[in-house]
Amino acid sequence: MSNGNRWLLALVAVTAIWGWSFVAKHQGLGSISPSALNACIFLPAALALFPFAARSLRQLQRRDLVAGLFAGTVLFIAFTFQTTGLAYTTPSNAGFITGLCSVFVPFILYLTGRGRPTSRQVLGTGIALVGLGLLSLENFTLHIGDLLILGCAIGFAAHVVVLSLSSSTASSQASAFLQLTTVGALSLAWSLMFNEFSLPDSLASVANLLSISLLGTALAYFVQTRAQAVLSAQKVALVLICEPMFSGLFGYFLAGDRFTVMKAIGAAMILVGVVVGELRGRAQRQGDCRLATVGAKLARETDNGISQ
Image 1 (cartoon, one colour):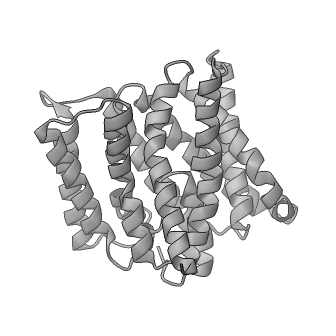
Image 2 (tube, one colour; image 1 turned 180 degrees about the horizontal axis):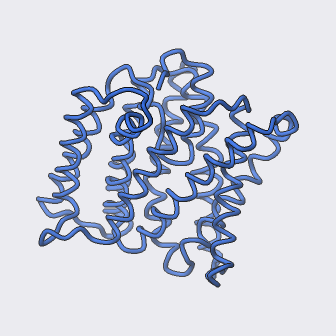
């Protein structure tokens, strides 16, 4: 098996883990608050990454530190929306709505004066938003959980833009460590401030959160950055688009999620909208919309096809 195929399979596995993590987080919220859950995920992930980032951290300049902390704060806001929203919606809905983040990237870039969305991006966004309506609206009311997840998708898109516009010279490992630590520390502070902090109440819950932390966060970051260095941007985009489908499959088999015909059409339209807007020679298709978006920094250093 070629090196590229190995990393392609590894990226598919990571994407499946991300899809599963919606179910795992949803289940974890039965015994722990959203802020405490994020703290328990991101702080161990930062600790796991520290040995690989230690040398780079000693070379950080002040602007690198500021850039990492700012990107981490944006990521904290996005994950706060996501984890809180998961308490009020299904893992399947959360996965498909989170997938909308990529269609928001060109519009946020436009707001920052970095170019106008193309006609395909506008079309893809329109299709995806119609799909969102079919997936989420009941009696013309958008549920609070889905609305929070939509805020998360916008936050992840903003995070991709922040990374793409950053002038930081820090290594990807140091940048990732700063962002992981910022999300974990802010989540811990939030949970302590509002008296929400608690630890998982069972061995199964501990194993669940550690799996998300080490496999879906720290390991996933490593795999994505390496995969982006050896695979074409289009291959990476196609794999990452599969994450909502994995969330739907795991939601169906592990969480009992069921789609009506209308909701299934909505979910399919979201995927079509993302594909229409993503499959072109643009950079944001590489910018994954979760923690591993920090890999976009390394990808910019290793793949000339990335140019948000």
